[in-house]
Structure formats: structure tokens, C-alpha cells
Length: 403
Image (cartoon, rainbow, N blue to C red; front, top):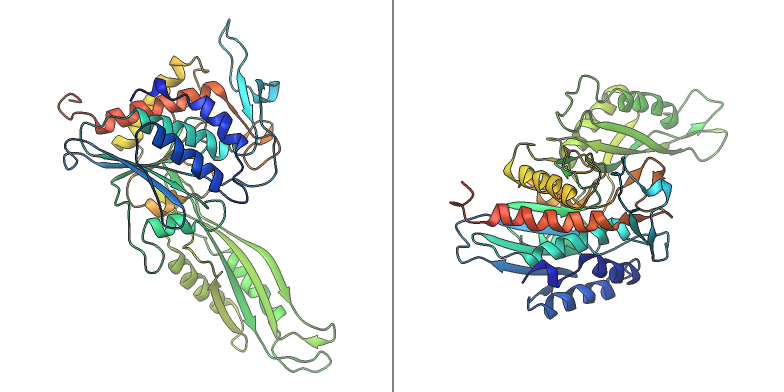
């Protein structure tokens, strides 16, 4: 069915008005009903994920492309509004004679209901000639990603229901094809000593040992190689707690750390390496325990896709053409670059993955996503929908006609 029978902008207007910050039930129902009205069967699986698939006449002759984004949103509440863009909502230089941009403002407008509208539009318009196309929508990316973890077999007792070859993940990227993102881990360094009266030369001071632990954290990445797309990793101590009384040698101290990783580091590997580094800098009479913070789903690990991969080239090329067709500034969209935040794209690696969508995490005036000025430009939503449609056609079209 042609994309013209589905208006992504009208859908987005409805979606932004549909709450999904406390529960995604209403938004999920909106998507399922939208698919059903257009003759597409879907199912709700894995703790609330929505799956819909289109199979070509030759499903084994091409890749399995998965289009994914999330249904949930976060605070603050931003009321729905559609109107002319303000000065701080206009990117680049407008073309001479262009009418002012229209924007849609509201909670989730760019993160990630604008990308949702674009992916849904491209999925509905698709008619794969080879391979398969799956739309996979998750319910809790902004919190624990339990849905995505179950969907990809990363939670205990689950199996991979997607088995995708290529992944297109909807997030606000300003129409760029984002090929990589740092991972994000959280852990604690626990130092255990022996309590004693502060007047005595006795005990083992866990707070004093934090000096060595912090030195180990500060120098942890000395000499580390920079990732060609993501640059260096980053380790930051964020919280420190210790001691129980002002006249006592403290027996305990705990340091919380935030880790932004690059490939090929894993969460388990990071924990082990940090434990060794801290142990080497802390007195022998103080115990060291480094642990990852408990969570019900795996941490987001870093991922990267080669910028010259066919998935990247298909999305970036389609984005440049769509930006031109919709009258966006010449420098808006179509670049290949890293993404600025951790996403569920991590769970799809090492399969080639691109993060793409309309809108921005932040612009020159400040934060956009997760902020009180959340908005997305109408023309960008239209361009993103056209991009997804053309990229799918390129990737799942007849191989012979593609040369």
C-alpha cells in the first residue's frame, strides 16, 4: 500500500497527544490499530513489544531488515502544539522564498514519536522484492529495556525473536545516519577496612584508601587507543560515601562510577580491569570489591558499524535526497556520524546497525529531547518517512535491478 495512504505527520500529531510516559498501553494500541486498518497483522510479545513482518516472495534471497524504535517517553510534560517555528527552532540557512518551517511540539515529539511515525510510514509503504522486513517496537527503552532484552534473547530464559541481519533504529539524529554509540555502564568500587578510634594508630582507613582508588580511576584509560568513530572511552567517579562517625577510622567507603565505553570493551571486561587497577593502588589491608550495578537487563554496550557499509550508504543517500526533495537546508541530514546517547541499538550488535530519525537530542539553543522545549520540524518528519521508504526499497529491492 502506498505511503500516501498514511500521513506520518497526522499520525505524529495523534501520537504526541497520546500519553506514554507512565504506561505505553494507549500508544501501543494506536500503533496496532493503525497497522490493522491497513491490513497488516501484528502481535504483542516479550513484555509489550509490537512485532509486524512483511515477507518478500524470496525471503531467503535477501537480508532481514528490522526497523526498531521505542514507544515510551519521559518527563517533563510538554503540551501538544503545532505552529510556526520560533527562531531557536530553525536550523541552517533557509532557502530564498521558503515558507517558515512548521514544528510539532510536545512530549515525545522527537524522542521518539517522530522517528516512530517515519518508520511506520516506511514500513507501510514497503513491498519487499527479496528478504524480509520487520517492525519491532519496544515499550521501555527509557528505563530498563526489558522488552528489547527479551526480544533479542539477552534476558535469562528468552531467545532471539528477531534474528535480524540489518537494523534501522529510530532516534532523533537530525536525519543523519548514526553508525556508532558509546556504551554506558554503572558500577561501584567498595573499599573495606577496619574501624578503630581515630586517636589510635590502629584500624585500616577505607576513606584514606579512596585516594588510591580515585587515582586508579583517573588514570584508568591512560594509553588507551581511541576508537575511529567514537574517540576515547571515559570513566567518571560520580558519588562517594564513607565513614560513620567523626572520631572513628572509617571501615567502609564506596565510589560510584559512570563508564562510557567504546568497542570492543564489554561490561564484564570493564569490571575486571577496573578491579585490578584499583587493587594495585590501594593498601593491602583494605579490601577491594568492584561490582556492576544490579539491573534486570544488560547494560548498553558500545556498538559500531563501518561507515561504508551498504546499510549506512543506503540510509545516508536516501536522507540527502529526501532533504533536498522536502526543501530542507543543504547541510541538514545525510551525514554518517556517531550518535550522542546510548540506545537499544546496543542489543542488536554486532549486526550492522544505523540510528536515524528526525529531530535533535539538542540544538544550538540547548536540550530538545527530554526537555521543556521538545519539538520536531514537520518537514523533517516528512523527509525521514521518505528516507525510510527509499532505504528499504534499496536494501530489499530486486538485486539485479540494483546492479
